[in-house]
Image 1 (cartoon, rainbow over the protein chains, first blue to last red):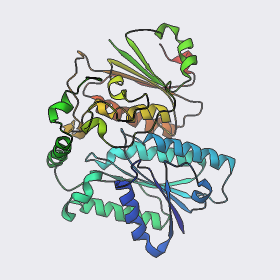
Image 2: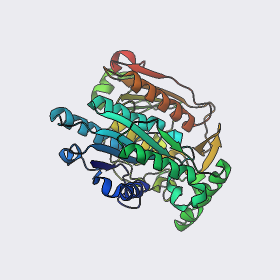
Image 3: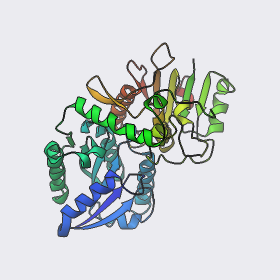
Image 4: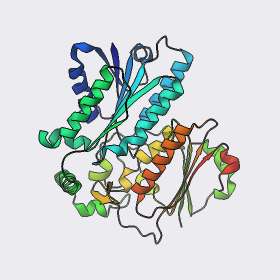
Length: 207
Length: 172
């Protein structure tokens, strides 16, 4: 079994998408061969299409796919139509977002499903991870639903099974999450010599 | 009343088709007129380094302020149940129009909006064009449209339309 992990974060390093790919690759271990691709580079399509399963892993940008992932999907679509592959890989997707509710990824996962249908591949399942960038900083006891969701998704992926999309959120209240998220910006603003007021009342251009 | 029109069509053909929009102080047209628009790199610079200004100096760095208007009209090819590459990139490069801070609105996490000088909530109209838009694409786009409206702020009004011919069906 060969899996293509297609990274959809534009960040060259340190993204949660990269971390999730690492985690899945470790969990897959000897069960399969994992090939890594980056959606920022529209190349190696023949290698992508040599795989049995495609896994798109990306962050939610403004309720949907990052724009460069759309470019990648369109170019891969055109390549598939010009060079019909011998086998048709199954398609999976993992989306993380900064908001609490994993279900807010639904419309982006649906776009990957629409793409799979457009190219004649089989859509299997999606995973939407709420509180994405915060997950590595949360204690295990509030990541139980998230970890369970990841496990369920991995089982579907390894068995080439289809399922309903899986959406997760941390076991803390939304109010606590808001407080934690907002507090996290303050040191970053201060490091840049800015205050909350600078964000709420930004200076005009050339000021 | 500022009307902001964001489209992915040929800029010259578009303005020739709608000459009444030319040189208007109350109309801002956002199209790919400055060369290929670079992708958002997720650096959050428009939130925490130069609030409301994108750090990518490619001619589209003022999207966070240009995105804002009293009426927003989106014209996009429907691509796998969502916006096309350019139109989506305008959204991505405009996140600095809001703030990084969270709040709970109608039970869901959203970003805190800045105070607005608008008297009325924004009107947001979307025209998705294409020949063979599937039922699933319509379902996904409808969900996205509702999510976009919720993110743009309480009370945002407007409708989503699926059309075939921009030049015959968009009332501009």
